[in-house]
Length: 155
Length: 155
DNA sequence: CCAATAATGATAATCATTATCATTATGGTA
DNA sequence: TACCATAATGATAATGATTATCATTATTGG
Image (tube, rainbow over all chains, first blue to last red; front, side):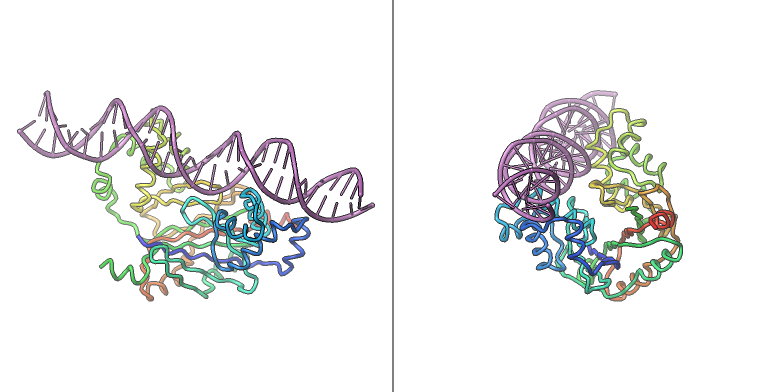
């Protein structure tokens, strides 16, 4: 079965990224800079810790996997990255892009095609929840479907 | 941070559950029956494999964890259960209830409160996608937020 | 430059899940 | 009913991702 996953990206994103970094991370090390760099360079990609490690080692040669995990999780808990699980048994990380207020990816795992959605489909729901007193920080949406091509060919 | 998770439950659900079971599962064993029983009894709950094991052992005393995994994954791939990940590093399974065409759970992991949503918030999006040729089987939605109480008390 | 402390990397430990495989149970058939 | 082919089970080893540990290294403020 072809799986399409739509990941809704959150709304709230502090523009003062670096402030946050300096305040919460305390130290901007070579390793952390390398990890950040990778995430920025691969904006829009969903990288596993292992993939980040490989890419970041070009900048910080003997970077360890533990540091990658530490850095990614820290950045995720600060809202700079999103941490998502695609039902493959491991987490993937993605840059939370300040430019895109709210965007959605569609990944067709089956045929590899990527679709983009600009729809702000959850606005109504979120407004409702906010009215009820919730304060929404982020959301994730996954959709399982046959993509048009696969849908056609399955008769 | 308080986390609220909304799980959207899928639309498409074959009413001929048992037919499916008999055709696809080949054999209805004591162990599988025990697992199914647990899932039916705890309709609405999100159970880990371990939790299913404990509950099902009351009916099938020396049930093994491997069988639980096998059965749960099989039922999930047949659309009888949903398999979801709550960012805690393991999967949880839930009965796909035929009665409820589309419902949403809100689990407040922080304070434990449970909210229910009747909103069919994704209808518009899904209709749009169907119009474009997709065939949607299922969706999952997670929302991170402060619940009203926690939002109040965080100043 | 030094001291206090945070960060790192190597590696062991953990935890959930999957694979293996010998044993057991099942359903169909003679 | 007994037998056979085969599916299912359970115990356990293996795997893979993530986390914890800890000695060493790097950084910042004074």
